[in-house]
Amino acid sequence: MLDGMEGRMWADHHDQFGKWVDGAIGAIGAALRLGFSRGSTVPGQLLSIAGAVGVTLLTLGATAA
Image (cartoon, rainbow, N blue to C red; front, side, top):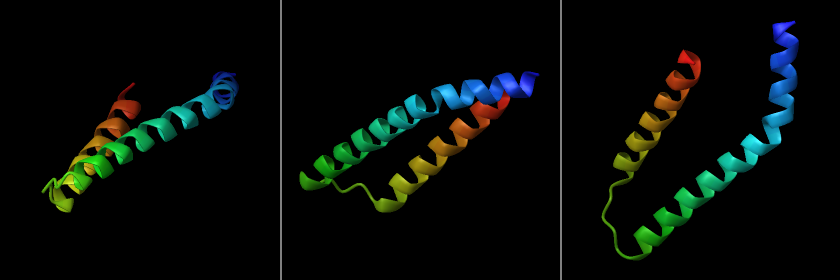
């Protein structure tokens, strides 16, 4: 029964979550493009590390909850 309830909750909130993630990624991308157009010297590896750490924290946080 719990699996069924969780499945319905996921289906109900899937579109809302997808729009939120799309907006967040779009905002980050726009900020990065703006920073690079101003002559920012942030190395690509640093951005990759920050992204990997962010994904790891989200994953660990989701599994711990």
